[in-house]
Length: 140
Image (cartoon, rainbow, N blue to C red; front, side, top):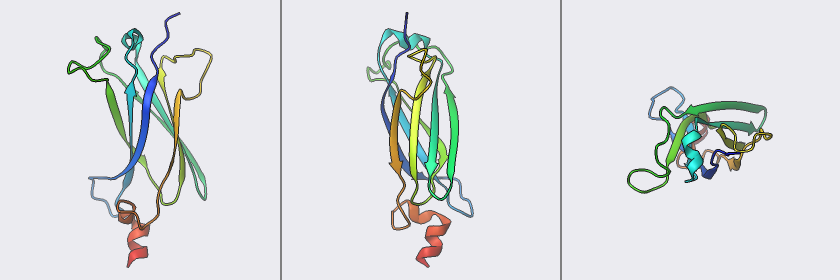
């Protein structure tokens, strides 16, 4: 049985959106590294799911498709394949559970994330979160 390679080094950080909106958006920059092994040639996509817990619970997923099949286990420059997705909105003072797994799944009988991290968003005093509308209003 050939298993598709797993993920390495899942990271989450908040960034200010470059899109100017009335409420400055703060989004998650989620990045990951693909393990360098022969199964990378079978990799089709990486699915990322985010659960947020504060006053109410939120849950959403995104599937990041790889447009071309991987020809090599590492980048032509020699480093490991690294990707990022920016898009999940970040609310103030919220605990997030971020999980990711490759498609097809490394473990056929397993549906859970192969890699997961917790991320707690800061409040209005943070240098990025201060751009949230609620943070701006609190700072007036």
